[in-house]
Length: 324
Length: 315
Image: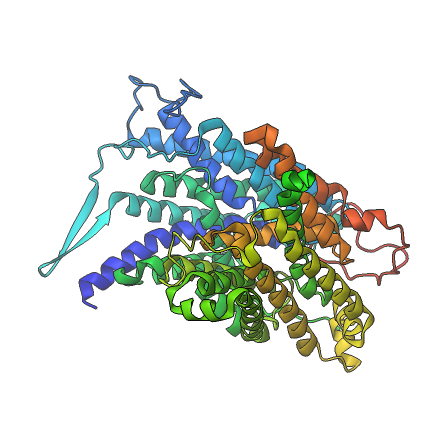
C-alpha cells in the first residue's frame, strides 16, 4: 500500500475508532461498577442522536412532531453556527444521560437490592432497549434523518493535504469527532484518576460492600456512573448521526454490538482498554480493502472471537483469578 | 378442523419457538450460557433450503421423492454437530458472560457471511421452498414439530436421569468441584453445547419450508436474545421452563395484534417486569419445592449496598 493510502486509512480509522471508544466507555463504566452489561446502551446512543437532531431541526419532517422545540430558531444569533450545534449536542447528550439514570432506577435498582442473577439484568436491559427503540418508531416514524448542512458553521467541509502527487482528504467532521473524543477521554481520565469522585467510584468498583461501610453512598455513585455512561453514549450517537445521518430507530443496534466487541477486546471493565479497543477496531475496519467492504461489519466480531480464544481477559484486562 | 385452520399456525409457531428455547437450555444444563442457537438454526435452515431449491440437487430430489426431507434433517443435524464441535471446543474454555459474547460474535459472523455468499442468496435469501409431504396448510407442521418436541422432552428427561445428566448438574453447580471429583468439564460442556446445536439445526431444517423463505434475518442477535428471554422468563431450572417461555413469548405479539404499533413496546415491558418480579421464571415460581441450601458466596461486584455482604452467620 502506498504511503498516502496508508495515512488516509489511519486517519479514517482513528476518527471512527475514537467514537467507538467513547461509546464503549459507557458500557465499561457500568460494567466496572455493577458487573453487568447494559444492553440498553445502544438505545441510549440512538436517543442522543434524536435529541440533538430535535434541538437543531425543531421538528421531525413527516409529522411535524415537536415542532418549534429547536434551541435556536431561525434568526437567533446561534442558529446555523458551529456553537449552536455544540450547545445542542451538549444538551442532547445530557438528556441521554438523564434517560440512562431513569433506566437504572426502573430496570436495574430493584434487581440490585435483591442481588439477583446478573443474567436477569441483561434481559431487563434488553426489554428497556426494545421499549425505547419502538417508542421512537411510534413517535417519529421509521425513516432516516440527516442533520442540516452547515451544522459545523463556516468550517470548510474537508481539509486537503498533498503528499507528492497524492492528496489526503480529511473531512472536518472527522477532525471534530477525533478532537472531541480525545478531550473527553482526557477529562474522564482526570476525573477518575485524580478527583475525590473518581476515587470513590473506583472504591465502589473494587468492592461495593466495603465502600458502603466506609461511608460512600453506593447508590449515588451508581447514578453518577449511569449518567456518565448515558452522556458518553448519547454524545457518540450525536457525533455518528451528524456525520453519517440517523438511520432510523434501529440506528444503535449494530453499534451496540460493536461496542461489546470493543470492551471485550480491550478488557471488560478497563477504561484504557475501551479506548485501545475502540481505536484497534476502528483501524482494522478502515484497512478492509474496498472489494471486501461487505465483510467490514464482521471485522469487529472476528477480532472479538479471536481475542476471546487467545487472551480472554482482553488486551489490557487482568486475568480472572479462579477462587477455589 | 376449523380450530386448527385458525390457530394451528400459531400453535405450530409456539412449539417451534419452544424447541428453540430448549436448544439454549441444553448447554445451560451444564451451566453454559451460550447464545449460539440462532446461528445453528440458520445453518440448519440454509442446508434444507439449499437442498430443496438449488438446481445442483435436482437429481437427488427426483430420486428421493419425499425422502429428501428426512435427509435435510439428518444433514442439518450432522453439519451442526460438526460446527458445534469446531466452535465449542475452543469457545467453552470461556466462562459466563465471555462465552455469551463469543457466541454472539459467532452468530454475527455467520449472519454477515450469509448476507454476502452466493449460495445463501445474499440479502434476498432463498424463497419458494417446497412443502414437505404434500403439506397444504401450515398447521400440518404440527405433525413435524409435535413429535420432535415429544422426542426432545423424552430425551432430556432420560438425559437428566443418566450419568451424563448428573455430570451436567455437577458442572452447573460447581465446575471446580466436579473436576476434582473426576468429571471432565470440557468433555461434558462440549457435549451439552453440541446437543443444543443439533436440536437448533434440526428445527432450522424443518422451519425453512415452514416459513417458505430463508434469509439472514433468521439468525440474528435479536433471535439470541429472544431465546434467552424464553429460558429466563420460563425458568432455567427445568426443561418445562424454556418450553413455556418460548410458547408464551412467541404468542404474545399475536395476542397483542390489536394493539398494532404498541405490541413491541409491551413485549419489552413484559421482559422488564418479568425479570424484575419473576426471578425464578414462570415454571420456577409455580413449583414450590424448597430451595436447595446454597453455599454462602463470597462478596461479588453484583451485590448491592443494602444487605451488607458480611452477615453475622458468615463471620
